[in-house]
Length: 198
Figure 1 (cartoon, rainbow, N blue to C red):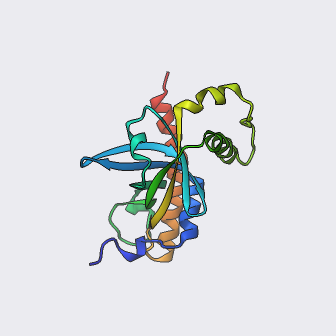
Figure 2 (spheres, one colour):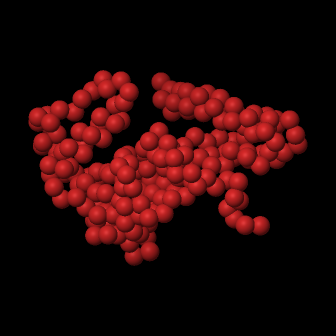
């Protein structure tokens, strides 16, 4: 059997773009001396490039330049699917949406570009309400520019992994979709209640 199963692969670039825009916090993976360095950063898609910023003291910052290879993972919703949601006999499974990207990364040295990029990213992340605007004359922004590095990743490979019970009958696929929605809404509240219980 071919792996991964074709019905769990989604090669529609628009679907993958939707994941990146809706869940922009990426897992950024670089490798040095056979050791992975991993950082979680919001990335913004511009054309076929991802734009990001990293603290200069992060060890991975040195690898986010010079045309180095990088792997990026964006994670959408996920949850355990109980066989109890199906109308047919099934086994337990886990449904999820992930986007795996590979690319070449380079540093952007311009402080003016960095400043504008931070303003643009804030504007994107504040949508649709835009309750906060990062102003260009913000003194705190100017003070921190020397401690942030900007980089861009040219995407060389796209892979969408959308495991959503597509191999089941249409009624069971819809039931799994409803379970994914319901579980994510309920589990976040329960998790936060447990973690931040007074």
